[in-house]
Image 1 (cartoon, protein in one colour):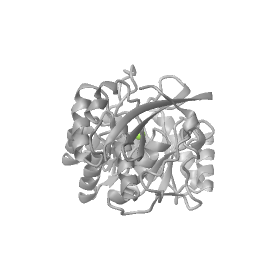
Image 2 (cartoon, rainbow, N blue to C red; image 1 turned 90 degrees about the horizontal axis):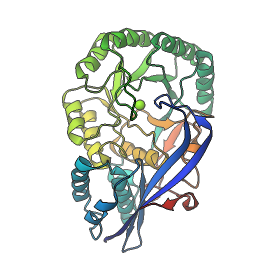
Image 3 (tube, rainbow, N blue to C red; image 1 turned 90 degrees about the vertical axis):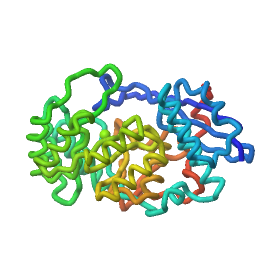
Length: 367
Ligand SMILES: [Mg+2]
């Protein structure tokens, strides 16, 4: 089989009302999704998504005419490109979709086939006042979620503790709760000062009292000593690594035991193959692997397959904060949104490949 074409498609969903994501400097009024389509001489077509693919065009020739099953070669080529240009991991995702379809198995099978479903955690996107957030998490539990991750304002930590206390009081002891401070990387142009370890240790100690399952990105990722000090001082698990740029950096995190929960997104941070290696190293060392999935339905499916394949967990991120962020908005590029079952599980699609059912009317080719 040979790769005959790589097309970059883009669709846009206007967001009215806008989505005020905690990590965005200004509310989003539109949601762009870029899809990579790989075509082959055998009529097998694969899809990937997750990042913009801006600037990829001149590199397509490095893949045209190649066998899509030579995935280790493609990963190494993508790594050489990422030194000079963007992180084009959605292409690797699309190649895995091709490979799964060619072999007639779900991608999760190719990654180890450990699980066929993973409990989802509702991953919120907005910062809300305590009573409103407590109400929304109760609604999430009603809908089947067994866990939820709450965004808190990094600049107002005392208010954040009040939010978590209200949520814990509302849902009781049986729901797992996580907290994300979004301090490890920044949107372009955001140069606000980071939290410091002393403030985070005090904050994490209060979270420990509320039985928080993990604290995500409390400090810049380069502050490895600070990250370790939070765990050592408080016993709260520290999560991170969602947007790391290189395999080497991910290896350093694992080798330095910087985190309790490793979260590299297969569509954004190193690609499915390299993330599998990191996941297996983390699991072998008795740490958790459960990736970031905040892109769109295709990125969510790609992360679901890899996580189920390697046996990660115990939960998988399900971006969800209605009415601002719904499965319909997140997955507008799919014929139907990805969703949990009544037991709160994300089931691995049984179709060959990633099981993506694209809505072609949503896209136009841009490269
Ligand atoms: Mg995060």
